[in-house]
Length: 195
Image (cartoon, rainbow, N blue to C red; front, side):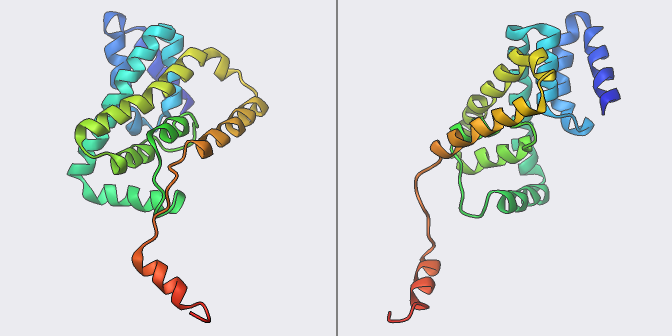
C-alpha cells in the first residue's frame, strides 16, 4: 500500500494544471486501490495546502458519497451486505445523527461507506442525503487536510488520546429516543411472573 500511495502522490505532483482533477479522481478511485480517506485528505494538505486541499477533498469525498448512493440503487446485494455489517457493528435499532456520523468520520479505521449507509438510513430524500453527506464530510476534510504533516508524525499515544476524547462527544450527540417493537415489549412483559 505504501508503494501505491507514493505512486499516486507522484502522479498528482506531476499533473500540473490537471492536478486538482487528478486528486478528485483519486478520491473516486480510492475504494479500488484500498486507500483510506484519511491518507488522501492528508496528501491533499501536503500537495495543495490547507484551503485548496480542503476544497478538493470535500468535492472528492462528496462525489464519492454520490457514487455510493447510486451503487446502492444499482447493486442491492452489496447494499444488503453493508446493512448486515452495520447491524453487527452498530446494532439493529441504533440510528446515528448527522453530528455523530461527522465525528465518527474523524476516526480513521471506521469504514467510510458504512457511515454513508447510516446517512442513507436517516435521510428522507436524495437531497437530504447529499446535504447530510456534505455536512459530515466537511469536518473530515478540514481536520485531516489542515493537520496533514502534523498527523503523519503523531505518536500512537497522542492518537489514542484523541480517540478517547472523541468518545464522550459521540455519546452526548446521540439520538435520545428508544424504539421498542410492539412484539418485543409484550413478549418481555408476558414472561415475567405475576403479570
